[in-house]
Amino acid sequence: MKIMSNIKIFITFLAITTVFSSNTLAEKITKSDIENFAKAYLKAHLDTPTNGKISIKVAKIDPRINLKDCKTNLNANIPENFNGRNVNIKISCADSIPWHIYMAAKVKTMIPVIVAKKSISKGTLLDKTNLTITYIDTYKIRGTFLDDLNKVAGSKAKKKITKNHLITLKNTCSVCKGSSVSITAKSAIFTIKTNGEALSSGNIGDQVRVKNKQSGKIITAQVNAINKVVINL
Image (tube, rainbow, N blue to C red; front, top):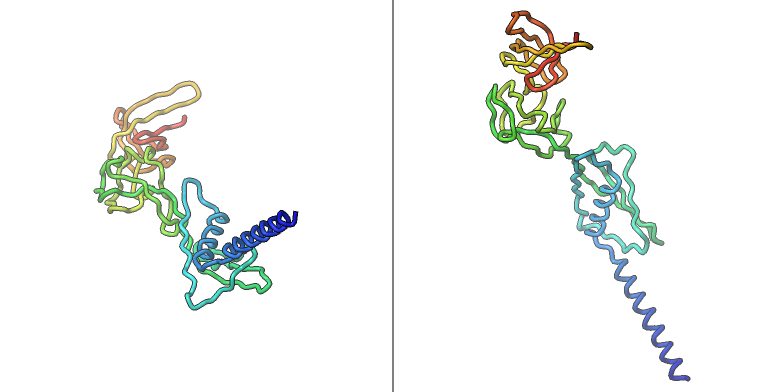
């Protein structure tokens, strides 16, 4: 019985030692661990735009800084005045000897946009051979951007567009001046279709001047598709 008792004591001691050793290793937090924790926290707490993605770069901790091990879970906090691009995230340890550190991070919010795959001359038809979709930092985007190739294909370049330049409503036209267009005049009881020539340029939703090729009459119509306009009577 005494031998069995001694064996139980030895097994219990061995189990406690193993657990203690395991916890001690788990408490060893490196600077790399803290940097990864900060990055993971930002990823979990920042809003990602629809179809977009977030790029986060956390600055390395100064090698001259000595941080004590933390026996509790690390905490993180993003300041209220976070501007969406640069942030000083606070990492803290609520141990018996507490500590905290501020870490600088750069955040890029990337969204898909259409850009020129190559240099495009004025009047060139736009399609998938000269356009592509890429991710761009929202801080580099000015004005209205386009992100659907299917809606742009068939329109033309209003001016020369350089390679990798953003495709916008300002440098494209769904109906371009001088182009042949389909004119649809419709009311509640009838619809009439004819052909015309665009006298001004515009994109879907814009009002343009169009000359009816049959009657020679100049009218104002709304662009409703590539090379198509409509008049609601």
